[in-house]
Amino acid sequence: MENQGAYFVNLPEFQVALSDSISQLAESQYDAAPADRRLLCEFYPLSEDRDRSNCYRVPLIDIYIPMFNAENYIEEAINSCLNQSIKDLRICISDDGSSDRSVEIVREIQTKHPNIVLEEHRNSGISITTMKAISLGNGLLIGQLDSDDLLEKNACETLLNELLGDESVGLAYGSCERIDAKGDYLQKEYSWPTFSRKKMLQTSICHHFRMWKRKYYNRTSGFNPFIVNGIDYDFFSKLAEITKAIHIDKTLYRRRWHGENTSIRREADQTRNTYICILNSLNRQGLTSIRPVAPNQNEPRRIKFADVQTKPALIYFPDYSRSNPYQKLLYSGLKDGVVVNSGSIDHAIGKLKYLETEVYFHLHWLNFLFRDCADYKEADLAVINFLNKIEEFKKEGGKLIWTIHNKLEHDKKFIDADLKLRKALCQLADRIHLHDKSSYGELIDANPVPEDKLLCQEHGNYIGYYGDFNPEYRKKSILAGKQRVLFVGQLRNYKGLDRVVIMAKN
Image (cartoon, rainbow, N blue to C red; front, side):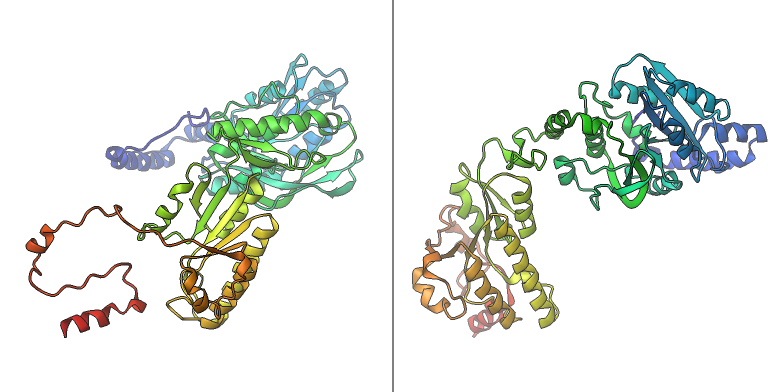
């Protein structure tokens, strides 16, 4: 049932009974008759009696091979499967109406290796052939091999350990190298170091060799028969949307480059279908207002994303709105014309890289930068790292706005680092915001603001935000008739609340 894609939910009231049942099942496995144990071993890929150097009726791994006129390479491809470091696998081959000796070669190999299954049908295209090949198996895991390519000896074992070692991982893939028609090394293939959902949305980064859990395959709609080229990108996008994917940066696959590869012959189809795959992924994820665009028409697959409404994005940092309504009130008038969110400088850089829109980074207080620093060395390093990211953001086309709330940070833990940061921000910022122009003279020594960048906007009020003050409070208060102190804002050391209380007492 799990292999077919069924979902299981453990209800709390059944947990104890379930645990007892599992314990009884484990005990009965060891008490079972030898014949029963052998049957369990044959049908259950995770049986403790399994020897991965043998083949079984229900294999641990099904390696599928879609085949069409592959007489020059199919025997090598099959042998690379048979020579794997583990043998608990089945080789599932679907022939798409080959007119050469491909089928004959496979049948001849089959006589010596019963773990090879072959299906034939009239020419129907790569998607249909792929799904027919996968349907020939019932193993726990599925591995992919093209009929003209080769697996490294440890390919299956390497990915198997990742998939069985972490239940949350449903897709594992390695890296590959390119070989010529004779099998000689040409170069390393493109390899993105770690899996990223954002990067996967731009281009296919699930490199050969790929292996995944069958249950997740059955939870997708499979391979798209209406896409001539790019079916792998479409399918692995679907798969990565419903399970965790992991990249093992080891060469596990040898991809043959002989001039007849589909990706070479149908380049225009692949480019067009890349956009179709991306649009389908966006729609599945509910991102219907986002569309892929190519800023450079000479590089149509270097894709960014644009909001259909093309609104500028403003990202503010740090977010103090939980304890202070200032930021919410400040941006309340921008809701219709600008998309406003809180986020770090990394968030802002990501927006620029993946969205074709204007991005503004509005920086407020700077004390966040020094909060976790233990000494001046760490403070200086924090300043350098932050300024490097600001420069990267600017190079990507972002605009920096800085509101100077204080001459120096109130905590005054690392004054020299604070001054260094402020002077650099004055040079990097596109606009510098003050709440009162009269404070300019007081700020200028620690914050050398160029006058042409200066933007003055008075601090807004909070009228109506907290509701009306109830005068009845005075009569009902336990402090009625006594002296009171009204304190506004966060309880912070630098504000000297302890001194205010002492003065009030005296």
